[in-house]
Length: 218
Image (cartoon, rainbow, N blue to C red; front, top):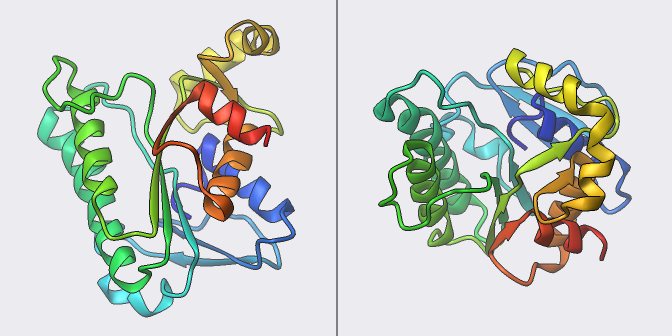
């Protein structure tokens, strides 16, 4: 699992630790997550885009939950591509080679441009990343594209701006979730849907918020 310290990653990790079918969770990040559990093993690795040095330690896993991401605000396209596309595909290339039976699940976002030709920079880069992952030799690959996300169990975004937005909308989020399930989901549902996709597959390779909610409901 990548990105365990982010809001989505926190929720996904919680669901993994609660699931009886999950025997172990390997966390990979540039710094220690601070999480402790009998199921958790952690590797601090500075170059996430190049796992060659630790490839022996990342083999034998059934699924990868890639929840790592950054905002494109203030970035040029080459900068954002380096962090989003290059890093993700670099890690995935090693994982596909040493784990051909792995299911890879990538957290993207609503509005991602699968044509790679649109006018929005971040959407093009995310689209290129999705497209590259979908043709890699994994057992299966699923792209999760949530829009609004309600944190459920104390999860918090790392970015200050996101903290302010979620703090302001917090009391309204349960209502928004009921009114707009096509555009809202929760950290808990994302985690559950990822686990179901990893165990049993999903009806499509690209899942929007409503698809995530339906999959999480079983």
